[in-house]
Every structure is written in C-alpha cells, then in structure tokens.
Amino acid sequence: MKETGPNLSEKSTLLQKGTVAPDFTLPTGAEKKVSLHDYKGKNVLLIFYPADWSPVCGNELTLFTEIHNDFQKLNVQLLGISVDNIWSHEAYTKSMNIPFPLLADFEPKGAVSKMYGAYNEQGFSSRALFLIDREGVIRWSYLSPLLEVPGMDEVLEQAEHLVATQTNHSKISESRQEHHV
Amino acid sequence: MFKSKLKIPPNDGDQRKGSLKAPVVLVQYGDFQCSPCRKLMPVLEDLKNHFGEDLCFIYRHFPLRSIHPAAEFAAIAAEAAGVQGQFWPMHHLLFQNQNELDAMTIKALGSSLNLSRKQFLEDLNLPILREKVQNDFNGGVRSGVNGTPCLYLNGARYTGLFSYKMLSQEIEELRKPKGLFSFFS
Image 1 (cartoon, each protein chain N blue to C red):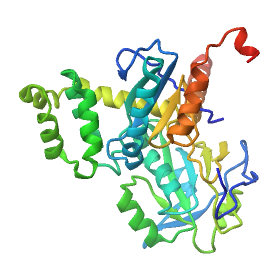
Image 2: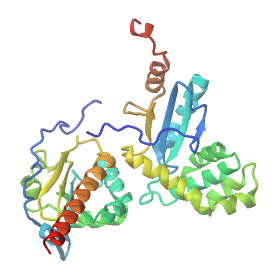
Image 3: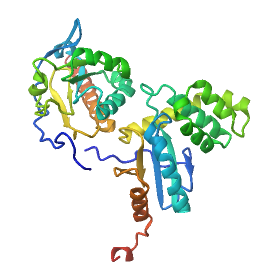
Image 4: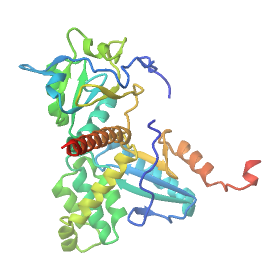
C-alpha cells in the first residue's frame, strides 16, 4: 500500500504485560469524569485510537460496538481514548451509537496516551489496546498498524483467556478454604 | 498475531454459487448497506463467470447494525428469499437498491421476486433465519473480520485490492494443480 499522509510505521513503546496500569482521570462529558480506579474489581479494555470521525477508527469502534455485549458478558468494561475533546466525543458517540464511554485525552494533550506509551508524536493516540485485570495489572497490550483495524478474534480470545484464568483461580481459592475448614 | 483464518469452514448451510469441492472457494463477509460491498458485487460476478466451476462463491452476513439500521433485516430477507430458492436474486436487488433500504422497501423487493409473497413475509419472522445471520456474524468475528467486505480464499484472509485483476491473479494461482510437477514450474 502506498504510504501517504502521516508516517504509518510505529515502533511499539507500549506498557507491557505484567505492568501495573497507571491510574488516570479523564473527562467523558461536560460534567462527567472517569477514573481507571472506578473500575477496580472489573476487567477493563482500554482502546486508544487516533481520531474521532476518521474512517479506520470508525470501523474499529463500530466493531467494538457490535460485540459490546460479548465483553459485558465477560465482565470487561470498554473505554475508548483519543485526544479529541468532549464535544467531539459526544457528537461521535451519538452518531455511531457507541455504548461505552469515550474519554478525552485532550488537555494536557495526550498525557494519558503518553503514560501508556501509546502516543504518536504526530499528535494523536496510537491504535493500541490494553487489557487490564480487576487488580489493575496489564495482562495484554497490542499496537496495531495505524491503518489496520485489529481483528476482534484475538481481542476476544485474550479477554476469554483472562476470565478463564480468574475463574480457575477463584475455584482453587474456594477449594483451599474448604480444605482448611 | 491477527493473521486471520476462516474459523467456520465452508459448509452446506452457506449460501453459495458452485461446488464446495471447487479448487478455489471464495467466502465473502458482507453487509447490504455497505457501499464497498455493492461495488465489489459485479467484480465477484465477473470472477465467477470467468472461473466457472473452478470457483465456488459463498456469501456470509456481517451486518453492522449500529451504523446500518436496515442491514440485519436485509440479511434476514435475503435468507427468507433463499428459503424459496431466490437468495441470489434478492442479494442482487438489495445491493442494487442499497440507498433505499428500509423495512418497507425490503419487503417490496422480496415481493417482486418469483416467489410466494405470503410465505416470504411470514418467513421474515422465522427465528432460525435471524440465528443464521447472527451465526454468520459471530463466525466472522471469530475469523477476524474487521470490516466489510472481507474475503477469504481457500480459508486464508485476502488482504489485496478488491480489483478484478488482483483477485483473478490470486484465484489463478490457487487453482493451479498442487502436485510434484508444480514444484518445478
């Protein structure tokens, strides 16, 4: 594919598996803010993307919207993050029927994206995913090429694997308690 | 990572043109309200005409309901027409009238085909047809479909341009016999 416009190749600087996910607070509307710690006890998928209204991001967020219920069943909260402002996010959410919050990493520009190593120096968030477990530890991160929507097969498999592991750990823990009683 | 393969193999439940035993099986995931899918339709028809029995073409549904409000109903309607052997004519009509699609238009399009109108309208409510569309969609998600149209050639994701030239080259390559002698050619 001919490369036009922004530089499409990115070297991964993403926070990796096993890292404690940095906490943050970002606005998701005129009077509403969201913090990562609000979701403690729940798994979270952070979806960093370059821009509202761009064609590739539209495809990506549409796919996440279509399978939002699958993530809900897995107790995984989706959070979209870009450097757009809250008004753009509000119009975009309405236009695309997006059922999960879009967070504005607008001021200081890209601060949270930078904390996660998911900031493209051309001025926008990278197309990156972080699966964070209910204890706040990153269990999977993935940097997608700028013009490529990640396949949901891998994302779902990662989420299912995490939940299966958690279920297994809970069972072992219960079994231990019963054993000691 | 993300090297997608078709997770649901071509099967008798698929809407298809050609034999499952053809040397090349092309599976399309599509949405009747997707403009690039409409543009691809004549290209795929030309490919089928050119390769004949060497190519089996399968259409699976991948309606993006959040942005295409009539896409799921259109998919169900195509399947309802398919119950009476009219899937492909309905598939064509839906793409040809893509910009007009709503429930009323879709019912009218189906009713214009050579089928029992009463049965067609009743079948639009069959849960099994809705499930078929949903199963196609789910299979697409598990196969890494990340937008429409999305094509698989003999189970492998096609990532080239959607042009007749590029696709025909790929199909030509795949239909070559894979024997000892092909190693030297």
